[in-house]
Image 1: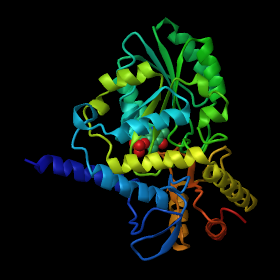
Image 2: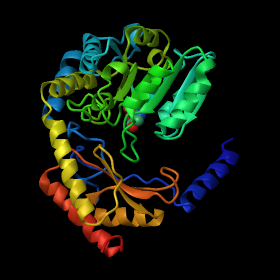
Image 3: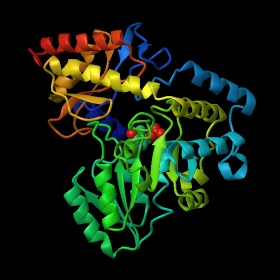
Image 4: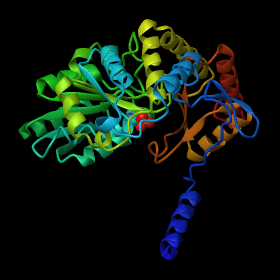
Length: 396
Ligand SMILES: *Cc1c(COP(=O)(O)O)cnc(C)c1O
């Protein structure tokens, strides 16, 4: 009986393609790293991975994964509360809490699940969730699953946030939710001002640290550390799938009663498989590395400054911000695609983003810097940007 829907789906796909919105995947045939080989045989510098600290293929991380595979097996074949909890799961939860200075942590298969499962158990009909309009899709979906009243404030607009908080005063509990670093622009949430408003209007604060855990802040504790408000944030969610090794997995960390209720009621935790031992073992190593030295986040900061300075000096227009996400603005959608394709021919792998991923007329190449990039890698990327930029009339 597939007939009718097949036609419908084919039309839908055709319309996505004819609007130029079809996402095509390039194939990499080596591990993730500063340099990869793609299936055409070319060696390219990666400028668009979330591998901020270069840990995705770090030898110590790989070795830790291998030893956990030997000591704790391949899979758990269970959710956590049936027979899916090993000593290393508890150890990792403790380690993440120690890293943030929080009381407890709960692991998920992904940060998408952490955000998807955090609101519904904690906030009901009598409560309010107040969310930045540019928050990640997983927060938006998580909020949709809760019965709480929803308020949305204009991106990083503290006056608007205050207005929403005033409107939400009739509700029992309030929580302000924000991405720590917004991934498309690379800007940081104004966490100090958000926490001050939360105090004034009696609200909790939650931040999603997916694009900041491990490298934003003096010791890499994230956006709350950057603004000196680590003790004022109630709930932190994050991913193990970006800077922290890049495999997969997510977590929620914060006050112990909150975490305990999530263990009892959070649906993606209760009804989805336990994190694989190899990932848990490797993640323990990641947090050990990050707790012992700030070398990688310092290198990342240095690399980011170097890349930004050179790209700006070449005449490109970039979005300001304190993160290693450097959006190079082209404004025109077709140009962003052409630019990215030409970059690849020059040995630089970067992606052009345009509407609806970013606002209309705001097309860009979003570059992401890594501690794994050598000076030579960054020089190669800068030279390619300049060459293609001149060729396509973006710079003189
Ligand atoms: C990537 C990302 C997620 C999802 O993380 P996964 O662990 O890959 O599911 C959630 N929130 C933000 C802000 C992200 O950037």
